[in-house]
Every structure is written in structure tokens, then in C-alpha cells.
Length: 181
Image (cartoon, rainbow, N blue to C red; front, side, top):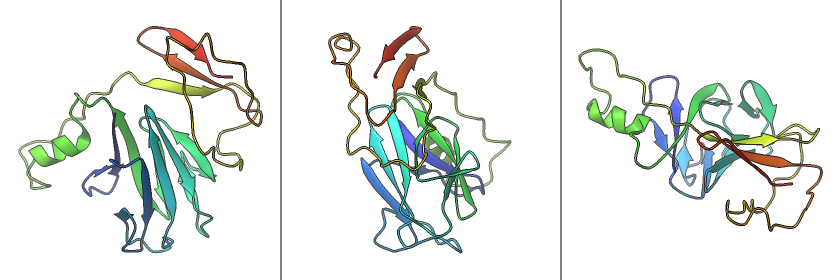
């Protein structure tokens, strides 16, 4: 899975290649953003197979997803995140498809090109849908691991509830729902 953050101000897309990525203004962060109000270590992105989770690191100015301040949230394709006014769009796609960074590089690293850059094709994503009555990012602790059973073994998985969260994986290509509760 390719994961990238695409800044809305025209900066180059930022690939998320590590399973744990720290974003902030400190030079030791994995992604350094020098933005007024940005904390030294502002947030962390956790990447697992098919899922990208963002967690605010108890910052003063906060982290927003789709305009809502969060403590943590699962990110979906085209979600908008804002870190102290620095706005980015989330790109999630297959490894075979060209990403926004690929298009950016093809244009010569931001050099003027003849005509506008086409939008990359949008994959049909697998959605993680909360089914309980608690909202995502509602101030609950981030799980230390997210274990999603394979489609072959999901019927054999024991029924478990974790702090009132229930999730379903919805595969748009196969119209199959896998209940993870």
C-alpha cells in the first residue's frame, strides 16, 4: 500500500514509508514541517496493512481530521488533515498505481509543465467503518496493535469487544463485509 500526504499549498507530496512516522518541527522527526504553532513532536502516523492511523501527541494547537480536532483517528483516502494550519490530503493506493509523488516527479520536481497535472486515478478503497456508538478519535487510547484477520480466517475468530469499538471491513470490489467485533 502506498501512503502519501499531499500538501494543499503545492509542496511536494510526502511519502509515508515507515510503519511509525513522527511529524513535527524538530530536526529529529521523520517528517519536519516548519510551521508556526507546530509542536516539536506534533503527531505520529502508524501504518499497517491497509490502514493509516494518526495520533496527536498532546499538542497545544492540535491535529484536525476533516475539520475536527482529534486525539487519534483512522485515516481514509482523501481525508483532509490540518496541523496548525498546514493542510494536507491523504493518499492511499495500491503499489502498482501511480501516486501523487510519481506525478510530481514526472513534472520535473515542480517545474512548470505544459498544462495542469492530471489527478491520479482513485483506487476503490477498503473502508474501515465504526459500527458502535462511539466516534472515532473520541479521546480513547490508541490500541497498541490493530489485528485484522485475513478473509479466510475471519469466521473462526473469537468474538471480542474492545472498549465498545466495533469495526467492519467493507471491500468495495467484492461487496463482502467482515465483522471485526
